[in-house]
Image 1 (cartoon, rainbow, N blue to C red):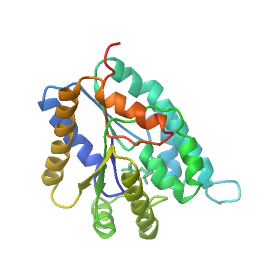
Image 2 (tube, rainbow, N blue to C red):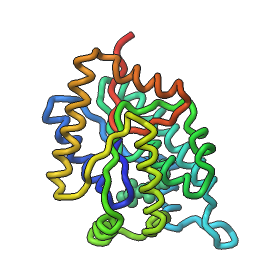
Image 3 (cartoon, helix red, strand yellow):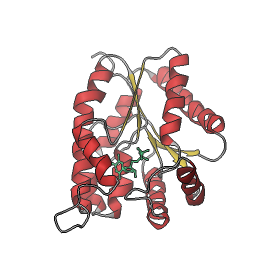
Image 4 (cartoon, rainbow, N blue to C red):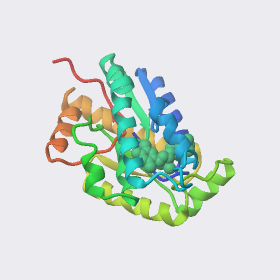
Length: 232
Ligand code: TYD
């Protein structure tokens, strides 16, 4: 999965990565969170400030965390696991690292992590790092509406959270998100190609084994690229 603050380019870069992997002859399933399913669609409306409480206040942070967790379970059951079982590489614009970085803003971090208990951990997560100002400029240039977590001070804390998660989890790699779309796409492609080559060299189950070992430490390990499970 690709991760980063709003405006870091995860959506654009996911498309670039999908094309890169297809050119390599791989079967790719590209997806995103919040998903296109019912909970994901509701989340997108909530992020835009719709569906307020009867007293006009916004839905509270713990409820948001539960909804993101529910959307992820739905995503796994409905889309990710079937695609992996059919032999596709699954790449996603955001996954569990987003919950750990963003929902920890509004709810206890350990509780947010506990909501991810037992989910499939990604084989590789790429964290696209950009300056807060650059990200704000890109959002404005794209004409994107202001969403729930878009305040610069919020995103500064989210960016620090992401960096801390990257330090804690070896499967999370940092990518410099500055420069043109093609430049950043080249950096991402190099990381993914390196990962695929290392996985091929060490055997088909290496990446899955790493993810399992990480999960067994009770750690949350956010997403970049999931590969089909090796036949057992
Ligand atoms: P984004 O990915 O930028 O989508 P769009 O381009 O459609 O606006 O926005 C999704 C927002 O959802 C972003 O602010 C991060 C937030 N988010 C969470 O807070 N937690 C999560 O678990 C996920 C998946 C997303």
